[in-house]
Length: 140
Image 1 (cartoon, rainbow, N blue to C red):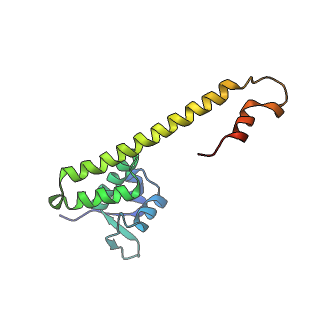
Image 2: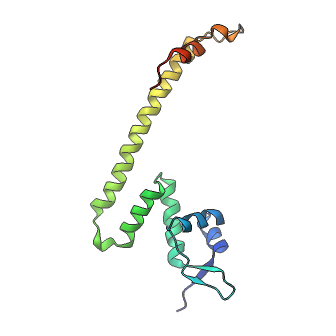
Image 3: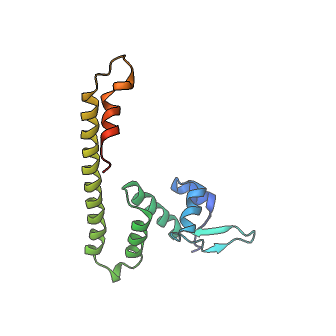
C-alpha cells in the first residue's frame, strides 16, 4: 500500500492551520517534510498530518510549543515513558494556570477598587481618584 503524502498547502487545509503556521512548526522542528517531489515541493506524510493535529489540539488546551515538544517526545516513545510523566506535564500546566488565575483575580479586585472609588462625573480629570491612585501606587 502506497503511503499518502501531502504538499504543505494540502496539509494546512486538512489541519485547519495556515501554511505559515505549518512552516513555523517545521522551523521549530515539530514536523519535518519527509520527501521532496520531482518539482521540489516538500512532502509531508500521514504521520506529519497526525502530528500537526496533535499540536493543534495541544495548543487549544493551552500548552506552549516547548510543552508540546515534550509531549511529542513522550508520544513518540511511549514504551520509554510512563503515564505518570505525561500527567506531570499536565499537572505543571494546571499549576501554572492556577497561579495566573490568582494573579488575574488580584488585578481584577484592584481595578474594581479603583473603579468604585471614582465618582465618574463630568468634571475635569485633574482630580480623578483613579489617576491619583495610579500616580501614587507602588509598582508590584
